[in-house]
Image (tube, rainbow over all chains, first blue to last red):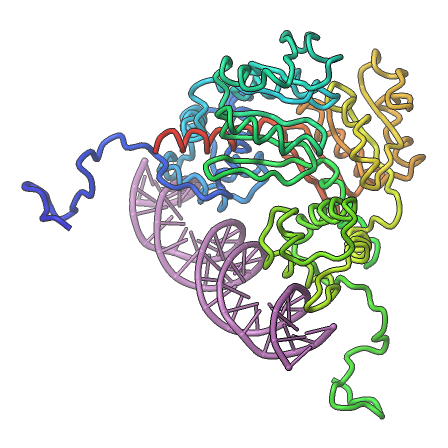
Length: 232
Length: 232
DNA sequence: TAGATTGTTAATCGATTAACAATC
DNA sequence: TAGATTGTTAATCGATTAACAATC
């Protein structure tokens, strides 16, 4: 609302610091959810020695439409070259910055049954920028055992494990009945992002982000289509 | 377009067979994706002895808004009672019918590393109406071993395993590089619904349904929010 | 320059929310 | 009957698609 600063031309700057501003102001949730897929596609074509790729080529590998890919990337700023395409390495770096993958992120896993055990050893976490820094379980038979090179700690040490590891993210792989309690304690200990595998809706305060993966539900959704097909 | 049949009143029937028509004509994808959550919520309140529940109560347990729950359920037909709420057992049955859970569905798991192993033993599949009828792996060291009471079969027997078990659904837990090939062979063998855990977009023909769960991507999406928060 | 391909706009489509009349 | 609660409508919001001008 103020007068244009002295020396300004006809394109009024909105900002005192116009250079090198962080790329992403607001990125829609649906776009954010697809960015990891683009990162995978870029890694794949880069491994094949490709240096520059068009939206058509990348979209094909990522399994989306070229229009959608371009639209999504446009929210991160302008990183392609008209007539040429996208520089694979550069775009990869930009998406990494937007997703906050410039540093390794420490993660804690709570619940070391079959699934938690598998996730503790899952190479995909490490490959994508995460380090498992702590393991917690309530079962005295499991506590003290070594999983993926770490000692499993008892439930009462949950907050310590989170703080000592500096974790702001956690994975919940406990039975449904224990999930909300574990969630509350993780949040109290400072965790702000939770990946929940327990088949239960979790209540969290504002500022905490939960993503739930229910393996049984996924199959049920597939069953719907399977069945709808057989009826037509 | 024809003349009203003799004896019709002012509400013209559109159909020759107006009674007991299947509840679901078209259910939007976003609604279908939430139905398993409603099923879980219903099971939970039923276990607590509740016979009738309002949309407010159910929505609270399911973690959605009451308006959304009512809207979703309205696509399945009219199963509540105004002024009273929903009969828990009846609604549970209706959602089960829509999802095609009236019979057990046979599922094959391909890839018995840590994750596949954990899924083969996952009680949530059995509890939600699925039976694991076959296991397949390419590693000769794994083939022939016993997992979850089943013998692991070699890759070349994939089509036999699918046909013998009558499976129309499968879970892929192989490394990314092998996923598309496994997918193609599953589809050729008659599988129509695939739950994919390999971090790779799968190409499938029309009529085949793929749901992909990428655990690394889930953490990356959480990382975005974690990071966006720390910047504001 | 001519051909290729992005970034953006506008149009379409689908999903969510809010409000309330119908009705138990 | 009065109070409660559904089922549905209309309004809003967000996401996707298609088309093309900008530009390398």
